Image (tube, rainbow, N blue to C red; front, side, top):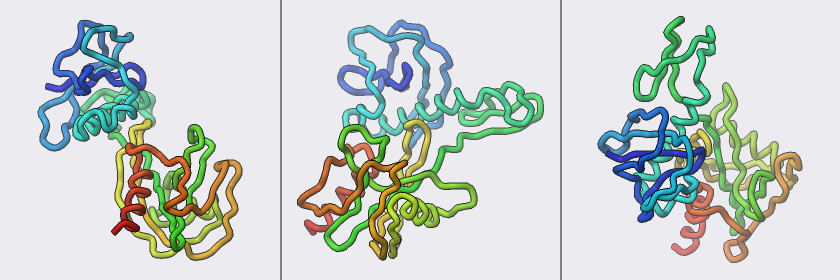
Length: 248
C-alpha cells in the first residue's frame, strides 16, 4: 500500500523519489483511503502534525515532484492534496450548519438534514492564440519572476467553456478569435481545480491588456520566446505542441 502524507503543501516522499510504502514514526491525523487511479491498490492519505526528520524521507512542495515522481504517483498525490483541501473546506453543512460526516471515500453527508456533498473542483479554461507565426502570451500579476503564459480564467455559472474563452480574452486583451478547438485537460491541485485547454486563431482586435489582471502581453515568434512555464503546466504543453507543429 502507498501512503500519501502532507505537511501543509509539502508531500512526504522517499529520497529516491517514490511515495512511501511505510511511514516514519511520527504523529498523524485523519488517515483515510481514497479512490485509486488506473487500478492501483488502496492508498491512504494523511496530514502530518509536524515536520519529518528521518533518514530516507524528504518533504517537497507537490509541484516540485512533477517529473521526479512517476506520473501515476504524481496524479495520486495531486488527488490526495485536493481531497485534503476539500475536507478542510467542507466541515459543516451549507444548509443547516451541522457537522458533515464522511459517507464514502469521496463524499460527505449531514447527519441532521441529509445533505450530501461531493468534491467539485473549480473549472478554468486556458487558450493558446496564434496569429500566423506568432503566439499570444501574457504575464499575470500572479506569475512569479518574468514568466509568461496564456490567457486563462474560471468558468462562471451558466457559461459554456467556449463562452468563457471568449469572455476572458476580451476582458484581458480585447482580442477576438476563431477556429476554437479543444486541446486537452489537466487536474490542477493548486489548490483545487480542473484546467480545460483550447487552441484558437486570431480573428480581430488590437491588443490592450487589463492592467488589473496583467503586467504584460505580446505576440511572440518561436525563435524569440520569453520565459515559459515548467513542464507541470498544461500551458507549457500548449507551447510545446506549437513548437512541435513547426518542426513537423
